[in-house]
Image (cartoon, rainbow, N blue to C red; front, side, top):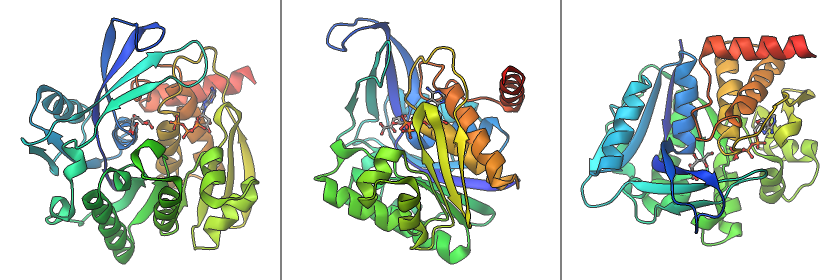
Length: 316
Ligand SMILES: Nc1ncnc2c1ncn2[C@@H]1O[C@H](COP(=O)(O)OP(=O)(O)OP(=O)(O)O)[C@@H](O)[C@H]1O
Ligand SMILES: O=C(O)C(=O)C[C@H](O)[C@H](O)CO
């Protein structure tokens, strides 16, 4: 089984129990958020060994996150604490439709103080795959340097790299710098997974093939563009195709669909599935992710994934 490594900022997440503005609601359910946490949980539930790198605050939320990672069989060897800073936190709305508002308290968080020192003793032996997103390079200069170093080491060692831009404009000084850094990193990856709007913003191109070609020109092998409920477009080694979205009875919360999608695509590729089947698995996990209120509580184990995919075939 391939071993996977990733790095990110995990946060305590509080999801409103009732619909309505965060200004007014009074009750919240507790979860853990973070794009790379979501990815790690999904991969681990499918049986892939994952190592997650982060820095937590020495507070109840940081300790809870470490326990949560361990309960999900994620390797926490490179999870450290910094007593000088707090773990980031988020509050998320409940909505009837569309994307919810998410309020974050993450400025100067413990995770934003990761730097080259955080990965100074990283033992790369046995890692075949690294998953990176556009969030850590937005957190601080130190985090950005660390991500560039991970990219450099991964490439030098022939470790396969997947990259999800995961744009967070609020964490960047301006959109130009965001696009420049994220494209610079994405162009070093093997697999790039932008949402359609992210792809347009990052490349300045409008069509899916044009967006894919921008990354292919830099040497990216596989580009999968997420199209929300409609599914995805893939361009990989001369092959281009659309994958339909799975039917979802009721969308509970859209956050985390992209991370679930990445789990499907990357796990499929690592298991040697043909690219069409890997992307179909991505679409299935993305659909499962939107049926739950938290950012990773809907991610399936292998039995529930197989059951959902078979069930969807029967309904066709
Ligand atoms: N409402 C939906 N119904 C069915 N499938 C969905 C739905 N929303 C998302 N998906 C699946 O999940 C994939 C990823 O979703 P989306 O395109 O919203 O990614 P994203 O913008 O990266 O999401 P986020 O950043 O909110 O996690 C889609 O390509 C699709 O296959
Ligand atoms: O908002 C962020 O930066 C997060 O990482 C929290 C969420 O879990 C993430 O957006 C889902 O992709």
